[in-house]
Image (cartoon, rainbow, N blue to C red; front, side, top):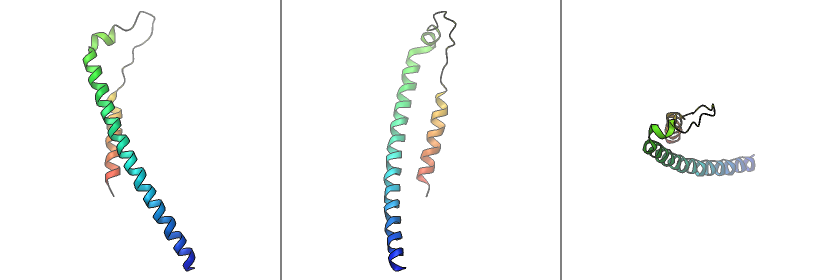
Length: 85
């Protein structure tokens, strides 16, 4: 019984260490995502609405503009959950 407990304890320690490693990696990815999102918003704001609206060459295609706020809200939720323990 003691051997089983020791084995489970070691497995638990490994899982907790791996969880912490993945948490740190997720935080770094979230930060990178926020930087890229900020850069994208900056580039889109520099392009101006006239450039975006004139891209339709009359081919009947609809211009779609992504709602960048959806990504921002999701990222904020992820980062706030990862900081809570």
